[in-house]
Each structure stands twice: as C-alpha cells, then as structure tokens.
Length: 503
Image 1 (cartoon, helix red, strand yellow):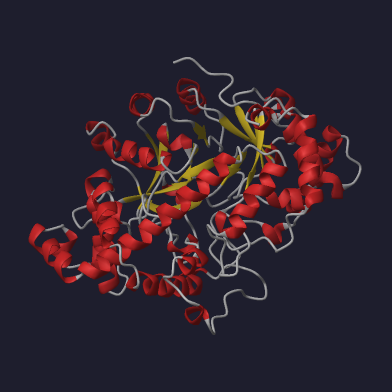
Image 2 (image 1 turned 135 degrees about the horizontal axis):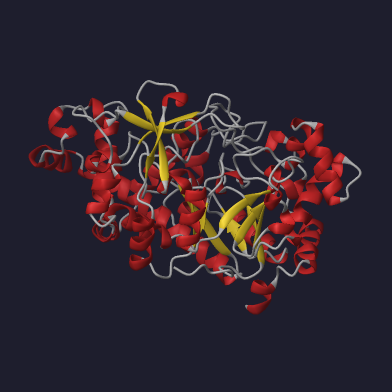
C-alpha cells in the first residue's frame, strides 16, 4: 500500500477531554460550556478537537476500562437540555451540591447523582416509540442493556460471577430477563438515545464551526463488559470464562516494573476467521461519532504483550498480532476512514513496517525528543508530514510538570535546541516547536496553552487514584487574549489552511 505523505492538511488542534470542561453539574458535558469551548477553538483558528473515549468509565474514572465498547456515558448528558425539554424541573435539582471546592470530578458520586436525574427524566418521557426504534437500529444495544440490567440486579457483579444460565446467554433465561426488566431496559435505551442525540448535535455544531473531532479507540476492553459477555470467543478465556493471560506492557524507561492493564487479550485467530467483524463494527460505530479515530496502542496490532494471569508484567511475552490482514480488512470495510496510529513505545522495525503499510500517520511526543544521547531522527526538524506531533499526551506530564521532573541534562538540551533561557518559557517553547515542525498536524494539550503544572495532568499510567482523569478547567479560562495568541501562532506557522479554506 502506498504511504500517503499528506494525510492531513497542515493544521492544528487541541487535546481536552469532555470531562475537563467547566459545568454546573460536577463534570464537563455536552451542554452550553461545550459550545463555548467550540466557539473558542474557532476563534483560535484550531481545526481539530481531540477528546478521550466517551464510553462509561470505571469507578476510578478511566474511560479505558469500560463496560461497553459501544455505549456512551450518562455523565455527559446535558441536564439543562432535559430541563428545557420539560423532562426535569428546578425542584429536581434543589439541595444538590455538584462541584467540590477543588473543582475535581468525583466520578462515583457524580454519576450517581446524574443517573438519578436522568431516571427521573425517563419517567416523564412519553415518546417510547423513539426508544424502541433506537434499540432496533443499534444492534449492539440489546446485549448492552441486558448486561447492565443483570449486572445491576446482581449488585454490580461481573458476568463471570452470574449463574450459569445467564453467564452462558441461555435463550430462555434471557427471555425471562427481557420480560422482567422491560422498563429498566427502556431506561438504558433512554440514556443512550439522549447521549446519541446530544452528541450528534454537538458534533454538528463543531463541524459547522470548521472543527473536526478526533475520537479515541482503546485497543482493549474490560472483562467486566457487555462485549466480553456477548462475544467470549473473541478473547483468550478458559473454561470458567476467566482470562489465562491479560494485557500489559513490559518494563521500560517509563516504568521499572512494567504495566499490568489486566484486560483480556484477543484471540486474533478467531477474530480473523470472522473477517474481523466485531472490530469493524466497532470502528464503523465510532465513525458515526467522530471525524478521525486515534487507534490506541497501535503496536498491539503487530504484536501484543501477554502476561499470565496473576503474574507480574516482567513474566509476559510478545505474541504476533493480526498485522497487515487487520489493516486490509479495515480499509476494505471503511475505505474513507481516517486514523491516527498511537505508535509510541520502544522502537520496533516490525511496528514501523505495519505503520508504513497502513499509511496512517504516527505520533511524535516532544517530551521524548530531547535525549542528548538519543536517536536524532526523533528531533522535531526530522518529523515527516505524515506525523501528528504533541508536546505530551493525556498520559504524560504537562510541559511545566515535565520541566520540573526531568533531569537537567535533558532540559538543558531541550532549552538549547529551542533557544530558551528560562525554564518558565518551556511550555510556550514546546508549543512553538510543535507548531513549526514538519508534522502536518500539531495537537496541543490545553493545559500547556494555560501553562499549568502537573496539578492539571490527566493521567499517570500504572496508578489509580482521585488525581487521575479528574482535572477540570476553571470558569474564565477561555479568554479572548489566549484565543488571539493561539490564532496568531497558528497563522504564523501556516496551520490555519483548513479553517481558511472553509470560510
């Protein structure tokens, strides 16, 4: 396959999770503040908004461990829109303290409050035909809804702990669930119907402002998920439906002990025999939500790291993934699909070959570019157009945090390279370096535009805690002066072509 050296127009965008937007209701959502954010991006001459997965997060807030690869989270539903539709009233909101003094998201309590209000809205929703139509038109929904109502009725326990008839998906047992929990299934249809309706409205608003949305596809899903329950044959599970091996990453420069993600690994031979059907359906579904998809952990399609269940990451091994056959199947099924390959990690010739074969642009992270003894091909002046450059990602320090946590040898080299004389200038210096690089697309985490420290970091891999996924913008962060500065730098480095061509 030919390698497309101009996959993107020369352009710029911003990385910011939807959950990080300001809102009155505990977490960023699809409401008024999201539209204000899109207006800000338009004023700043940005062409892309990159977000994190919108699937229901786990109890820690991680969107990379979800109960569904297809469903959306009730966290993001605009409650004011439900109020405007007459489904909620002021009394429903009285006495609720939504936002904590530290402005952080409290996922467990916030979701509980939001679900209570959405359930009230459901009881006042008369158009049940729309919900039935939604369920019929979204084939993934039936097993998701069944999974959720069974899981709720059994105290939140995963399917591997259910009685055998339900664990195995016995037809008679599931018919009984459909009958017994008819209203609860419709309630889940209402949540997904509202999520879809509101997100599509927001995306249309963004597209009308010449902003394209970059979504994010986690490579793995949780064992505790509707997908694993309804498609257990797609995963390497034993006779008890438990994984013999789980996903992770070996020890490397970023983690002395490696990373134990714990997700079940795919049985790629079985998936290939189906023509990669589940994966293609998943990607097609996501292209109804996003303009571009970032393929998380792209190297896992070439080789994946498999760790025996109960072992440490160092005990794992690399196993060949689906490689070119997967790329071919995706391109045949979704020929117009646009992807970004998250190809970060230890250098690998085989991963580089797969990336070239795919024609997808890979990623460069500037925080990894300034090892004075490292590979000079990783320097920004070497970046080819078929690259997406970031100062850092949601898994990295902010630039200000990186400047405080990195050995002087690296920081001094970075400052010399960028002709900076003060560490406080590093956030703007890194943004400028990304903007003027040869990469056709530059994506800047918004925290770096704000010059924020690691209090604004989104996630630290291999850790769990309230510091992850919970950072939010303060009201008033979207100043006209900042939009003007962003626009000016975008124009100076010729990254406003996409915006200009549509105006």
